Amino acid sequence: MNPVQDETTVRNHGVPYFSQWGSPGWVARIAEDGVDPCGDPQWRRSGFDEPNAYRFWAQRLCGLACLESALDYWGIAHGTRADLLEAALRHGVYRMREDGGVDGLIYRPFADWVEAEFGVCVEVMTDEAIEDTAARVSADTLAIVSVSAEIRRPERPNQERGGHLILLHGRGDGGVWFHNPSGVAPYQADAWLPYETVARFHARRGMALTRPA
Image (cartoon, helix red, strand yellow):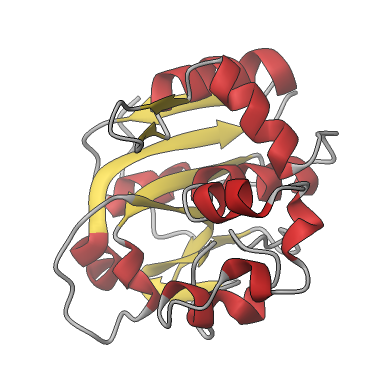
């Protein structure tokens, strides 16, 4: 599919927001100031019981936070984020490296798992402008796109593109509405940025998620 850029306003209201960490208000302290994520009294909210496992994984689960938003919006039952992680690991969505790091979120295994487990149709995009990805968003379709985590401070120059995932849930007025799992207000939940700004951070990769018929 190669969509034509579409300036029609489409905005899905009420899409739940999920932070990568327990409390959205703790994001800046954790992501920018280096505060211990387990200092957040809500750190167990996502189903983790062991502090070190939470410290290791929470910073890497932007994609699962986006998935939770979509599943909840469409009323599709699912486990905790820790449960989702366990399933994702079984399906090769994340792969442990010998150096102790992680490769992932890997799109194709993610698409296969989400389609089989939740009935959500997932289309992978590997080289697509943000305007064309935004044109896919509809009443039935949301999009997860790869951007730099630096997008949480879009007024600042960025050094990278990609490496972090956000959820697009609307388009219009020359830009997109999105949830950023590691964002800070006003670019955290139901944030809007123009296409040209998002393009600075965008890696031209992502996935379109369409709810079951």
